[in-house]
Structure formats: C-alpha cells, structure tokens
Length: 147
Image (cartoon, rainbow, N blue to C red; front, side):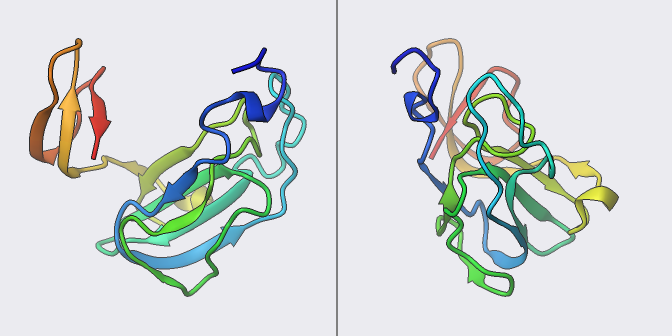
C-alpha cells in the first residue's frame, strides 16, 4: 500500500512473528534502528533485531529483521509453537520489511550451518491449484505454505 517509501506501506510490517516450534529462547538482540525502505543504513549487526530459539535436537530457529522494540520474549523463556515473539520489521541488512527465518545447527550464528526445515501438518498450494494437506516434509520450490 502507498508508494513503498515508508515501512508502514508494506503489508508484512508489524505483523506478529510466531515461534515455529516449542523451545527455549537462547539469544535476543533488540533496539536496532530500522531502515528506510530501499536503504540499508543499519547493517550492524546484519541480523537486525533477532531472536534465536533452541527447538531441541540440535535445531535452532533464527528469527531476524524484527521491528525495533517489538520482541516480547527474553533469554530463558520457554515458548510453544504459535506463541508471538516479536513483529516483522526492517532492521539489519534489509532493504524492506521482512522476516528472515531459517533453522541452523548452532545457537551462535557465526558458527552455525543452515539445515533443512521439515514442515508438519500444513496446506500446500502451487500453480493456483487447491491447497493439499501435507503431513510432513520439505515444501517444493514455488509452493505456498499455509497453516
């Protein structure tokens, strides 16, 4: 909406970010200023406002680029899948509001490798077909995922 010159012009901006899986918060970075869309002036740290959750089994969820002062969890907090942890923002190395989410094998971003995200119980839609219920797996390229 609008001409894209303000963060509030983006539909994702300020939307709740939910924990993907049960776990314990192991890292929080907050207070990073947000960028003006199209500019990346606040790239230190590149993650922006960040939450890392230990989901168990050597799986750590990385939820980055969050909105300044929106993070609602602290280190040590236990979260359940679907609990709000913050809001979509435009912090860090980000040209427009977005959530950067991935799963990694270490709580320390600098030491971690990304690992595949295995989805459970979701609806998949691709090429304008009706959604298909999936029980477990990795979404195919170009597939839209919905709960």
